[in-house]
Amino acid sequence: VVERAGPGVVVDSLGVPGLRAENLLQSEGATLRDNLRRRRPDLLVVAFGTVEANHPGFDPSGYSAVMQRVIEHLRGGAPAASCLVLGPPDRCWRAGRAGWASRPVLARIVEAQRDAAAATGCGFFDTRAVMGGPGSIDRWARASPRLAQRDRVHLSPLGYDRVAALLESALLSVTSSGSGAPRRRPPGRETGARGSPARSGEEPRRTRTPGP
Image (cartoon, rainbow, N blue to C red; front, top):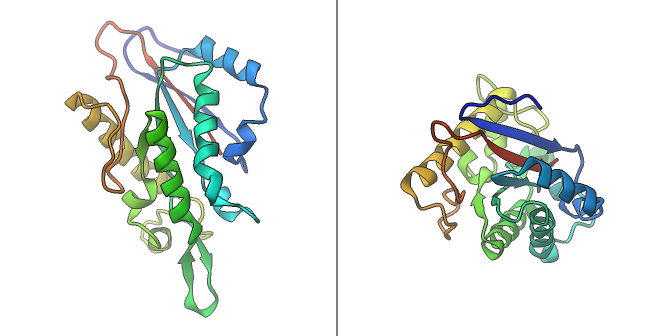
């Protein structure tokens, strides 16, 4: 990892295509915790849900408990880190002649993740809501320039940039106001990151992001 001595942010991304939250619980716990201790992240960002929404037999009833276990699993290696759960973006499927329709299970996934974040003291960012809610990814796919891919699952580079800018704005708003403790808010406005941006003379803050 290449880092500078000055202030800034270092992002370590651990993205695995097709990974579901429960798969992370099957990883070698000691190795994961050791790596987290070595990196000493200030903020853990957990992002799941897109794969679950399309997984056959997925049962959302116990999903909040799974997410809570995942968060505590990660905290085993970074107990002092703040944490943020990123809700999944909108996802559509082709509903015959009716065109594209948003996956109904996404609403339950988002609610389960919001509950898990609140139960574990994490912040929550509702990506689907800031995109425009159910069906928004279809509109993003038809936008010019395109903000989502034609599969109505993945965003385009511009779309990811837009979500990143919205997330950055939300995080800076929370940290600059000093109200970093997570609080229940209307969908799309729940954010939280217990910490503050690096000041001059501080070493860069590190963020660890596991997810698909």
